[in-house]
Length: 288
Ligand code: 13P
Image 1 (cartoon, rainbow, N blue to C red):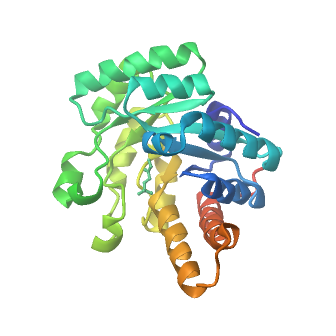
Image 2 (cartoon, rainbow, N blue to C red):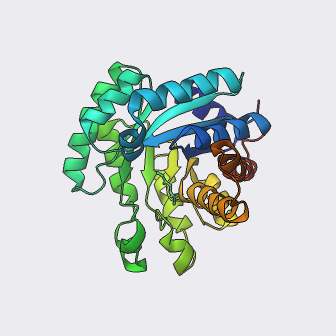
Image 3 (cartoon, rainbow, N blue to C red):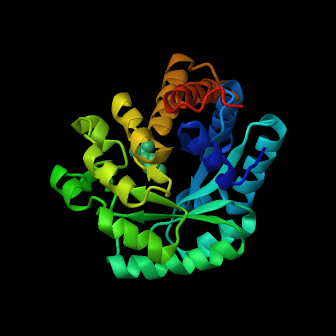
């Protein structure tokens, strides 16, 4: 059942586990994520990005996700979230479409501007009972993710406290050595700065923290973040890799396939298996 993120967070914090926030882009990836939630009896977050909205259309994507959750998920709570909302327009449209949480990503502008822009969205969203995730520090992506950059752009604990006080965001995405994208999988795995994460958590102990860029991180590193305030773990690239690798294998292995349903079933199943593994890792399996 579609559930407000606040309810999922309350249970995760109370029972001591983390929630997976999984990016979906189409019908099949949504099927994989929803079926994993049902199979593992796990709450989770389904998120879409502005690029996915451009690709699939907000109304179509939302109706598809809501219908599937209603029809297939039964009593498993699933929250709908906008990932990396950059324009106020898409934020407002997702709020109108019924999302219970949106991310306002102004992490690439100076601190003061980030506060003003994020605060604007918080005021708007809170009037409609929608939660807001802010980002402080910059979670770099792809080619920019040099070790020096990661150090330079890490979240500052004092700024995090000021940011939360001034914006009143409900959750906060932090930069502690994590990076988005697949380059890290080629270049070797990044090391998270757990000491920095601990300092941030101490500065804002009540605020659920969000770990972006979880693809390819070592499992013990991910687990260690749960001791220091991480309640949501975002996963995207690993899902896309699993899906596209399986799709490629299916097409190469079965040149006789022409029915789209035969072609897309193995990648959907492969994606579901990855999500199930993550739900076990995050400790959210068998909570319902
Ligand atoms: P990855 O693509 O590294 O899994 O990051 C996902 C993410 O943080 C989405 O916001």
